[in-house]
Image (cartoon, rainbow, N blue to C red):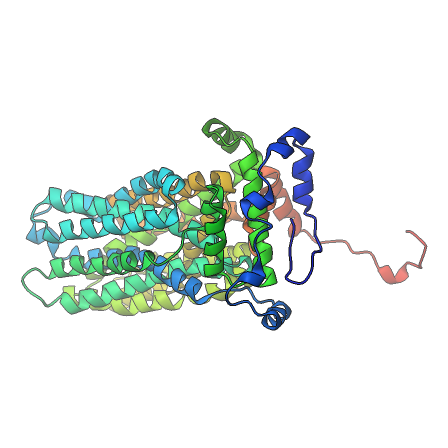
Amino acid sequence: MQVHHPDTEEVVKSPRRSAWKLHHTSQEIDQSPSKKELGYKKFDWKEAADYDEDKSKKDAASEDQGTTSLLKFFLFVACVGSSMFGMDQALLSSVALFAPEALHLSSNEWSWISSGATLGATFGAIVAVPFNWLVGRKKVLMLSSLLYITGVVMATAAKSFIVLLLGRVIMGIGMGTEAMTIPIYISEVVPKSHRGAHLNIFNSLYNLGVLFGDVVDAIFIHVHPGSWRYMIGSGAIGPILQLACVFFFPESPRWLLKNGRKEDAQKAWLSFRRPTPISEQEYNEMVERVEEEMHENTSSWIVWKEIFTKPRIRATFMIGLLVSLAQQWNGATALGYYEPTIFTELGLDTFQAVYVTVPIGFWMLLWTIPPYFLLDKLGRRKTLLFTFPIFIIGLIISGTTILQHSPKKKAIGFFVGLALYYIGYEQGISPLAWALNGEIYELHVRNIGMAWGASTLLGSAFVSTYTFSRQVAAMSLPGVFGLYAALSTIFWILLFFFLPETGNVTLEGVRDRFEGGLLQIAKRNWKSIQPQNHKDASLTLPGIQR
């Protein structure tokens, strides 16, 4: 890697670059695109409009990451899509109290309606792979917004089961393409030391959407006739806002470099990151990694072969699968879509069941704040392992107190357990499933990897939501909570052994944490908790070896 500072021509060699040369012939190296062609050496920081030499020195001293106002605005707008997920969940949970009766839907038909969005999202995450590869992140976000708006309009106007279901599925396709794209887009432009915190914005705005949806439900619940149509229709606010704002953002610099548009990549980077030594270094590392990827044989056959045969790459896909399953098979999405219905079974009337979701939504949003500090300071692995037991205990408390005969004790115990559940869930696996899937895959398999993680997560959301009423019928509500607690315990143990720490390293450096595959990761994790036998250095004289 060559790091060109504004006032010096000193060059720092990268071990990875040297290693790359060892595995390629001199002819391959001579025929390869140079750094100059990729925009590596021509990244002239002095020509940046807002460059100031004295300010740059101060920034270097304070380790300035070079974050611009546009990047901050982009992070908010890009993640508005996440609020659509949360808002839909909150809206439909209350719609479930009115729409089935209005449209004469059976329990089985409503299972399809409640899970229709996640079914479409699963398909959307898969089809987003070629779209991300061909047209880039920005256009995919615009397309997802249009699909979402179309689906909401259809669902709002629906007068039959088929139209309502089609609207939900089309809306879900927009959800899935967005879920596939946003974490990649964010991870490709934010500073590496704050990548976990920035990726947590996706989770925070999901819960902000839940809170907004709960408030909308509380507002429209007394509007008759057709209160549920107003609830569903309000879901178009987020995608309309996102569609209007995405026009003003540049494309991902990584995608532009990969497609040979070096000047556009430099401009895009400077839009997101000010020219400081740290941001320059991260840009150069990105260019170097893209250069390596362009020289490797990345045909479809080779890519798929590497996924199955390279232990390092295969391990990333297994971890992506594991965290995606763990995020959904604790009941999060299923409980969200059926919350008011569950509350009515605890003894609340329809209006109380809707109103109580508002403080619950606020409680969920509140516990998305700590991850902004935990994910990058404490690390992904420790955060996940510490928070799992919290929400497992919450599931056990909620499930067991349902068995109480006293309605008051039943309600109090259930809500205490639910509060504890969200403390653990919102700080751990909820944000980390998206964050990890956005950062663990190597560049040449990243589109496939993110589709794998997102489709697994959303597919699990579909299955758990669609089968929830059947689970309750077969095992009772306490039995379902016990099932989720047991599954979460299994996931906790697996993650303890196989999840490496991926925080505070570049996206290119993350791959080194997966070196050797799952078995080597498990050995390193196990070794890290073993007591170390330290020799007493004070008893060793200089020059004398024990």
